[in-house]
Image: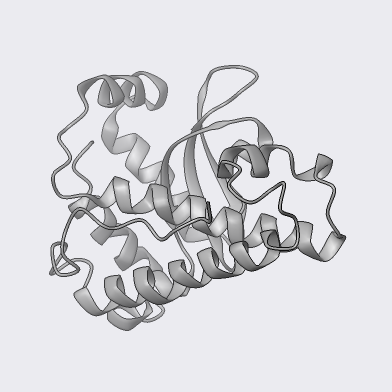
Length: 194
Protein backbone atom coordinates (compact mmCIF):
# COMPACT_ATOMS: atom_id res chain seq x y z
CA UNK A 1 0.00 0.00 0.00
CA UNK A 2 1.35 3.40 -0.96
CA UNK A 3 1.86 6.22 1.48
CA UNK A 4 -1.00 8.74 1.60
CA UNK A 5 -1.49 12.33 2.66
CA UNK A 6 -3.14 12.26 6.09
CA UNK A 7 -6.38 14.17 6.44
CA UNK A 8 -6.44 16.97 8.97
CA UNK A 9 -8.90 16.74 11.87
CA UNK A 10 -9.64 20.44 11.48
CA UNK A 11 -10.36 23.04 8.81
CA UNK A 12 -7.59 25.07 7.22
CA UNK A 13 -8.90 28.22 8.91
CA UNK A 14 -9.04 26.65 12.40
CA UNK A 15 -5.75 28.24 13.48
CA UNK A 16 -6.64 31.79 12.40
CA UNK A 17 -5.53 34.47 13.06
CA UNK A 18 -2.16 32.98 14.03
CA UNK A 19 -1.63 30.56 11.15
CA UNK A 20 -3.65 31.59 8.13
CA UNK A 21 -5.90 29.30 6.10
CA UNK A 22 -4.09 29.94 2.83
CA UNK A 23 -0.75 28.85 4.30
CA UNK A 24 -2.32 25.78 5.89
CA UNK A 25 -3.98 24.72 2.66
CA UNK A 26 -0.87 25.20 0.51
CA UNK A 27 1.37 23.64 3.16
CA UNK A 28 -0.87 20.56 3.42
CA UNK A 29 -2.13 20.03 -0.13
CA UNK A 30 0.95 21.16 -2.06
CA UNK A 31 4.09 20.77 0.07
CA UNK A 32 3.12 17.72 2.11
CA UNK A 33 1.42 16.09 -0.88
CA UNK A 34 4.63 16.56 -2.91
CA UNK A 35 6.64 14.72 -0.23
CA UNK A 36 4.16 11.83 -0.33
CA UNK A 37 4.15 11.69 -4.13
CA UNK A 38 7.94 11.79 -4.45
CA UNK A 39 8.39 9.20 -1.69
CA UNK A 40 6.01 6.85 -3.49
CA UNK A 41 7.79 7.46 -6.80
CA UNK A 42 11.13 6.50 -5.24
CA UNK A 43 9.64 3.39 -3.60
CA UNK A 44 7.88 2.24 -6.79
CA UNK A 45 11.24 0.96 -8.04
CA UNK A 46 11.49 -1.37 -5.05
CA UNK A 47 8.34 -3.50 -4.62
CA UNK A 48 9.66 -5.00 -1.36
CA UNK A 49 9.73 -1.50 0.17
CA UNK A 50 6.26 -0.38 -0.93
CA UNK A 51 4.00 -0.44 2.10
CA UNK A 52 6.84 -0.53 4.64
CA UNK A 53 6.16 1.73 7.61
CA UNK A 54 7.81 5.13 7.34
CA UNK A 55 9.60 4.62 10.66
CA UNK A 56 11.19 1.43 9.37
CA UNK A 57 12.38 3.11 6.18
CA UNK A 58 13.86 6.11 7.96
CA UNK A 59 15.58 4.22 10.77
CA UNK A 60 17.13 1.72 8.36
CA UNK A 61 18.11 4.08 5.53
CA UNK A 62 21.71 2.92 5.33
CA UNK A 63 20.66 -0.73 5.12
CA UNK A 64 18.13 -0.32 2.31
CA UNK A 65 19.11 -2.00 -0.96
CA UNK A 66 18.47 1.05 -3.13
CA UNK A 67 20.44 3.37 -5.38
CA UNK A 68 22.10 6.33 -3.65
CA UNK A 69 19.78 8.81 -5.40
CA UNK A 70 16.74 6.87 -4.19
CA UNK A 71 18.14 6.67 -0.64
CA UNK A 72 18.38 10.47 -0.67
CA UNK A 73 14.83 10.73 -2.04
CA UNK A 74 13.52 8.37 0.67
CA UNK A 75 15.35 10.38 3.33
CA UNK A 76 14.15 13.76 2.10
CA UNK A 77 10.61 12.92 1.08
CA UNK A 78 10.00 10.24 3.71
CA UNK A 79 11.30 12.65 6.34
CA UNK A 80 9.09 15.42 4.95
CA UNK A 81 6.08 13.13 5.07
CA UNK A 82 6.78 12.00 8.63
CA UNK A 83 7.62 15.48 9.94
CA UNK A 84 4.50 17.05 8.50
CA UNK A 85 2.27 14.18 9.66
CA UNK A 86 3.48 14.87 13.21
CA UNK A 87 3.27 18.65 12.81
CA UNK A 88 -0.44 18.59 11.88
CA UNK A 89 -1.14 16.57 15.04
CA UNK A 90 0.72 19.06 17.25
CA UNK A 91 -1.40 21.89 15.80
CA UNK A 92 -4.75 20.10 16.19
CA UNK A 93 -7.11 22.55 17.99
CA UNK A 94 -8.90 19.65 19.70
CA UNK A 95 -5.72 18.81 21.65
CA UNK A 96 -5.93 19.12 25.41
CA UNK A 97 -3.19 20.28 27.73
CA UNK A 98 -0.96 17.32 28.52
CA UNK A 99 -0.15 17.69 32.21
CA UNK A 100 2.56 15.01 32.19
CA UNK A 101 4.22 16.65 29.20
CA UNK A 102 4.05 20.03 30.93
CA UNK A 103 5.55 18.54 34.10
CA UNK A 104 8.38 16.85 32.18
CA UNK A 105 9.18 20.08 30.35
CA UNK A 106 9.11 22.12 33.58
CA UNK A 107 11.44 19.69 35.37
CA UNK A 108 13.89 19.62 32.47
CA UNK A 109 13.96 23.33 31.63
CA UNK A 110 13.01 24.92 34.96
CA UNK A 111 9.63 26.14 33.75
CA UNK A 112 7.41 26.04 30.67
CA UNK A 113 8.31 29.66 29.95
CA UNK A 114 12.04 28.86 30.08
CA UNK A 115 11.44 25.94 27.72
CA UNK A 116 9.56 28.18 25.28
CA UNK A 117 12.37 30.75 25.38
CA UNK A 118 15.03 28.12 24.70
CA UNK A 119 13.00 26.43 21.96
CA UNK A 120 12.21 29.80 20.35
CA UNK A 121 15.87 30.82 20.50
CA UNK A 122 16.93 27.54 18.89
CA UNK A 123 14.29 27.81 16.14
CA UNK A 124 15.14 31.45 15.47
CA UNK A 125 18.84 30.68 15.10
CA UNK A 126 18.43 27.64 12.85
CA UNK A 127 20.21 28.60 9.65
CA UNK A 128 18.27 27.93 6.49
CA UNK A 129 15.49 25.37 6.30
CA UNK A 130 14.82 22.65 8.81
CA UNK A 131 13.01 21.75 12.00
CA UNK A 132 13.40 22.47 15.68
CA UNK A 133 12.53 19.48 17.86
CA UNK A 134 11.95 18.62 21.47
CA UNK A 135 13.14 15.04 21.69
CA UNK A 136 13.71 12.26 24.17
CA UNK A 137 17.30 11.21 23.63
CA UNK A 138 17.42 7.53 22.71
CA UNK A 139 20.67 6.96 24.63
CA UNK A 140 20.18 9.04 27.77
CA UNK A 141 16.34 9.27 27.94
CA UNK A 142 16.79 12.99 28.64
CA UNK A 143 14.55 15.59 27.02
CA UNK A 144 16.47 17.95 24.74
CA UNK A 145 15.97 20.63 22.11
CA UNK A 146 17.72 19.97 18.81
CA UNK A 147 17.72 21.45 15.33
CA UNK A 148 17.80 19.21 12.28
CA UNK A 149 18.38 20.31 8.69
CA UNK A 150 16.00 19.92 5.81
CA UNK A 151 13.47 17.12 6.49
CA UNK A 152 15.55 14.97 8.84
CA UNK A 153 13.56 13.45 11.68
CA UNK A 154 14.84 12.64 15.20
CA UNK A 155 14.16 8.91 14.73
CA UNK A 156 16.97 8.88 12.17
CA UNK A 157 19.32 9.50 15.12
CA UNK A 158 17.62 7.04 17.46
CA UNK A 159 15.60 9.70 19.30
CA UNK A 160 11.89 10.08 19.99
CA UNK A 161 10.25 13.25 18.63
CA UNK A 162 8.02 14.90 21.24
CA UNK A 163 7.31 18.24 19.56
CA UNK A 164 8.47 19.72 16.28
CA UNK A 165 8.29 23.07 14.56
CA UNK A 166 8.63 23.46 10.81
CA UNK A 167 10.88 26.44 10.17
CA UNK A 168 10.98 26.15 6.39
CA UNK A 169 9.71 29.43 4.93
CA UNK A 170 6.80 27.64 3.23
CA UNK A 171 5.33 27.18 6.73
CA UNK A 172 4.97 30.92 7.36
CA UNK A 173 5.97 33.14 4.44
CA UNK A 174 2.50 34.21 3.24
CA UNK A 175 1.51 35.70 6.58
CA UNK A 176 4.82 36.37 8.32
CA UNK A 177 7.18 36.82 5.32
CA UNK A 178 10.75 36.76 6.69
CA UNK A 179 9.68 37.31 10.32
CA UNK A 180 10.43 33.84 11.72
CA UNK A 181 10.24 34.94 15.40
CA UNK A 182 6.70 36.24 14.77
CA UNK A 183 5.73 32.87 13.29
CA UNK A 184 7.22 31.04 16.27
CA UNK A 185 5.18 33.23 18.62
CA UNK A 186 2.07 32.29 16.63
CA UNK A 187 3.00 28.61 17.00
CA UNK A 188 2.88 28.92 20.81
CA UNK A 189 -0.57 30.55 20.59
CA UNK A 190 -2.11 27.61 18.72
CA UNK A 191 -0.31 24.83 20.58
CA UNK A 192 -2.69 23.38 23.19
CA UNK A 193 -0.66 20.57 24.74
CA UNK A 194 1.59 22.91 26.70
